[in-house]
Amino acid sequence: MSTFALRRALTITVTVGVLVLAATACSDDSSAEQTPSTTSAASSAPGSTPASASASPTGSDTSTPMDIRVTIDGQEGEATLNDSPAARDLASLLPLTLDLEDFHGTERIADPPRKLTTENAPEPQAPKTGDLTYYSPWGNLAIFYKDGPSASSDLLVLGHIDADADQLAGADRITLKAAS
Image (cartoon, rainbow, N blue to C red; front, side, top):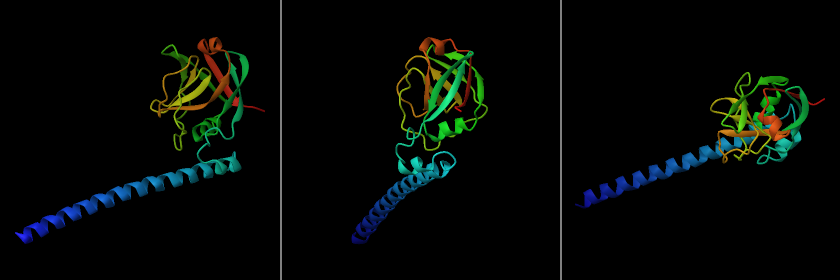
């Protein structure tokens, strides 16, 4: 009987040890994943904003905004892209002209020439009127002419277009280009 009790205690101890080891390994991996993410954000930034990307790893999504020019159905305006990796990826595609279509009576959408990066995405936030966003599951850009739904990790806010909600609601074509 004592041999059976000893075996049972040993089995339980080994099982608990394996679970603790697995839990520790998982938490070490997630920590390791976050460290390269910060490094990756800093390493992808040298082409555009070396100082700010390394100075603010948690707030890099808005640390160094980039002014851009927009033309909506022939009317010129201004916009700002945040400093998220996805926004920098979009900036690398400029100049870009897109045909827009309505989606759910809230936003105008279009497909960029390729999917944008979603690495090191900023904290999700609910889109507001004028926000330029990227919906990662479909790979499309969306311009909100009404405040959007609640925050979603699939929807990345890339920046903001300074335009009237009515102008955005009726927009058929938009051109984005770097500000001179």
